[in-house]
Image 1 (cartoon, rainbow over the protein chains, first blue to last red):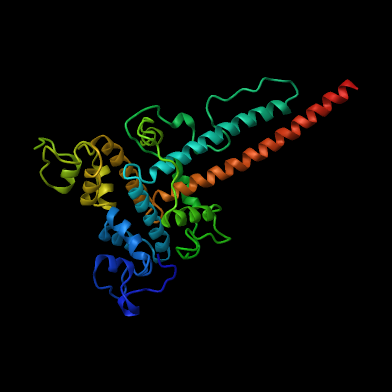
Image 2 (cartoon, rainbow over the protein chains, first blue to last red):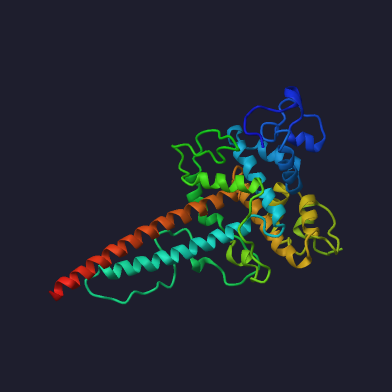
Length: 226
Length: 121
């Protein structure tokens, strides 16, 4: 992907990666040109084209403000490559894996907090493992996860109020260097990790272990949709 | 031909054949799912993707595609990658809290053992 805002349209010397892939003339003002250079951009665009289609991505980008388009392109490339690597679950399997980690950590935290409370109380009480992992972070609870059900997904109601305050992007990032723009004033503290994650993924890194078919379709059982 | 069109064929305003690739996964009572899919991926791309998968995995694939499409509709910039980032942040925060709580437990246990030792003296 292009790491700069210089358009690589035909006016600047050669088609952009997208137009190269599509074997069409790269016009001035090509929407893909700033984000898909003529070298590696074509390979990235190939994945995007296969999963989303050029016209769908073009429409998506047109509806995104220009300063957010680099981020949008990177996330679209990420999803496209995740889908090609795992045609069944795409990046949902990664979400499920992370969600399980969160639940496990919250359970452990609740247990330790209860244990700490018993140590600090004057009368000794046996530490009790809480039934539900409420913890101090309430975004996810193990009781929200259905046991076994046909694929259902719902994370939006859990994450919406948090996400709206999280994505305070203040500057236009360069896709290769600042994946999701982590300026010092950003509210996103872990942007560097996502940057590393996406860079690793886009350049052929490994995704976490996928759920095996025999694990009762864990991706479908863990994420609940309303 | 299916007497009742699936959500996909209804959306696309076409006849729903008996072997419609979409009909098992897009029932007519939930038109929104296919609307998201069509808007983000396009019917043709989804059809190709499903056709390349074994039958028994298509339901899961359709659901995960719906999920990702819905995320992208809700957040056109980050899609479900935003959720990944959020979860990673949450993991980091929880790990920090765990470390802090473990340290507090260690301090509390030290204080307790010191108190017990002074009681015995």
